[in-house]
Structure formats: structure tokens, C-alpha cells
Figure 1 (spheres, one colour):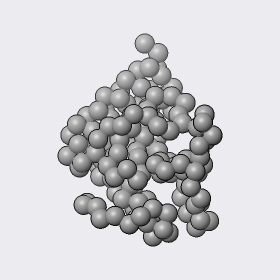
Figure 2: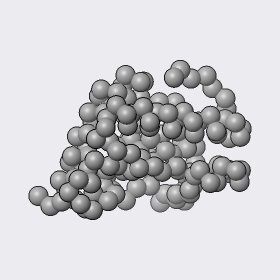
Figure 3: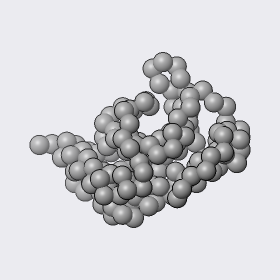
Figure 4: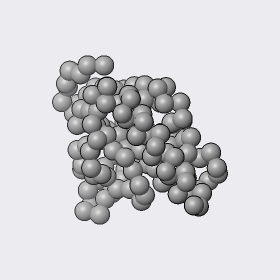
Length: 145
């Protein structure tokens, strides 16, 4: 098995374990891929405002222990929205094949530290949701932590 496939399998196993043991307990559920991606991804949501996508393929051929890290994309679920300038430092634009514009925030997470990774990812999603609400991009909603 080549390095890329081996690292993808290891990342998938780690993400599945984090999902079963942490994200499900936090109220997340898996969703089909809705966003542009060049490789394999695992997608979860909690509040239908910001979805989380684990990019399993990106940089999986880098080195033997690349499976320990994973790029996480936080997508605003509503396409074709206009972000105010103060938010553009936190998000980048991504177009899909249907000419829909999505905004995403990308981060690198050490998924080998599973419970720390889950807490950090959930915290980032909550912070991005609050930021969007603060700038009146999305309706305010009450959410349990």
C-alpha cells in the first residue's frame, strides 16, 4: 500500500473514532458532502449554520506520520452570501461546480490527540457561529455548549 492510501486510512480511522466517542456525544451527526473538495472528506454538522469537513486526502502523501494531522474546513452552510469586510480575514471563498460560492475557515488539527481535537474543533465552530451572528450574517439562535 502506498503512503497516501495508508495515511488516508489511518486518518479515517482516527476521525471515525473521534466521531463515535466525542462528536456524537456533543450532538453532531454525519452529513453527505455538500462542498467543493478535491479528495476524500468526512462531514459533520450540529447547528446547520457551520458544517465541519475533515479533509482526509490533503497532504496525506507528505510523510509517514501525516495521518496524525488533518485539515478541517468550517463551511458556512448558506451559499452565495456577502460577508462584510471584517469577516473576510477569517474566511476564504470556495466555488463549487454549480457556481455557488461558499465561505470556509480552514485549520490544521492534530487528530491523534482525539479528545483535545474534538474540543478544539467544537470550540472553533461555536466561535465562528457567534462571529457570524454578531455581524448579522445568520439569525441568532440559542445553542447548548
